[in-house]
Figure 1 (cartoon, rainbow, N blue to C red):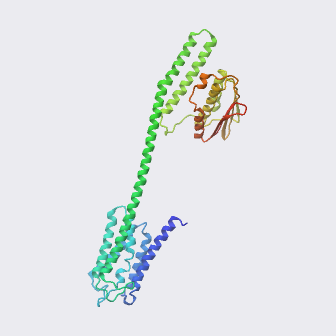
Figure 2: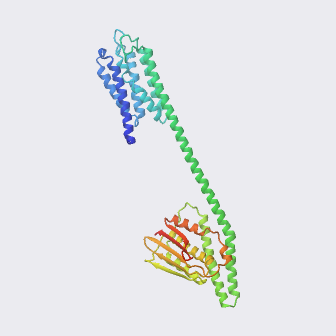
Figure 3: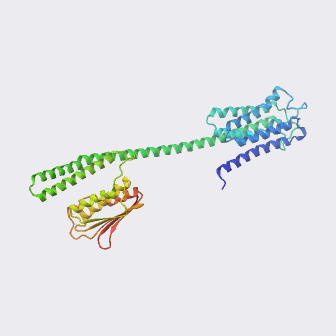
Length: 406
C-alpha cells in the first residue's frame, strides 16, 4: 500500500495531467486555424496545469491563477477586438478555452481548503465572470469544431458554468461533511473530558468524606484508647500491667500517626505528585517485627543481599505487606511462627510465610476487619509494577509473596 504522501502526489499529478490533456485536445482541434500566438497559448496552458500540483500548499494562489487566465483573454478581446477573432467571424477558440479545464479542479480545491469563505468566493466569482465573458465575445461558431461537435456561444458558457458549479457544490458538500465530523469528534472529546472531570470530582468528594469520617470517628476512638492506656499505666501498681499499658499506649500513638498520614493522603489531590523522603526499608521491617514479637508472635527476619534505600512507594508497599501479613497471623493463625525473607537486588523480593495455627483463633479478632486487605496489597504492588501472590501452603500454613522493581 502506498504511503499517504505518495498517494496525494499521484492524485495531484493525475489532476494536472487531465487538465493539460483536455486543454491540448481543445487546441489540437483547431490546429489549421491557429493564430501566430498559439504556441504561447499552449505554454500558458502548461503553466496553469502545473500550478495544480501546488494546490494543497497554495490553494488560494492556484485559484487566482486559474481565475485570471479565465477572465483576461475575453477582456483582451473586448478591449482589442480581433485579437482572438478572425475577420471572417471564425474564432481561434483554443486561445479562449485551452486553460478552462483547470477551472473546476481549482474551484473544488479552494472551496474545500479555504479558511474563510470570502477568500474562496472572490476567485470563484472571477471564474464565473470569465466564463460569461467568453460567451459574450463568441459569435456563432460556424467554422470551429470542438471535440467533434459544432458548439455555439451559449453551449460554451453553459458547459463552463455547469462544470464550475458542480465543482463548487462537491467541494461545499465535502467541506461541510468534514466540519460535521470534526464537530462530532470535538463534542465526543469534550464529553469525555467532562466525564473525566466529573469522575475526578466525585472521587475527591468521596475522599474528603472518608477523611472526615475517619478523623471524626476512628481518630476519636483511637485517641480515647491511648488516653485510657496512659491512665492505666499511671494508676496501676503492677509492673506487668504498667508495661502492657505502655505498649498499648505506644501502639495507639503509632496508629494515630499512621491514621493522620492516611487522612492527609485522602485530602490531597490524587493526581498531584507527592514528594516523600526516601526511607530505609530494613529499619521499617525491623520495627514491625519487634512490635509483633512484643505481643507474643514468634517472627524471624532474614535478609539477603545488601539492604539499600528503595523508592518511597516501594518502601511503603513492603511495609504494608508485612504489616497486613502479621495482622492476619494474629487473627487467623494463633500460635503460628512467621518467617520473613527479603532479597535485595534489581527487584526486591519479599516472602512472609507462617506455619499452621496451633491454637484456636480469637473469634473477636477473626471477625474484625473488612476482608479486603490482600486485594488492597495486590493493587499496591500492581501500581509499583510488581507481582503479588497470596495462597495457602501445603502444610496448612499461608504464604504471601511479592516482587517489586527497586
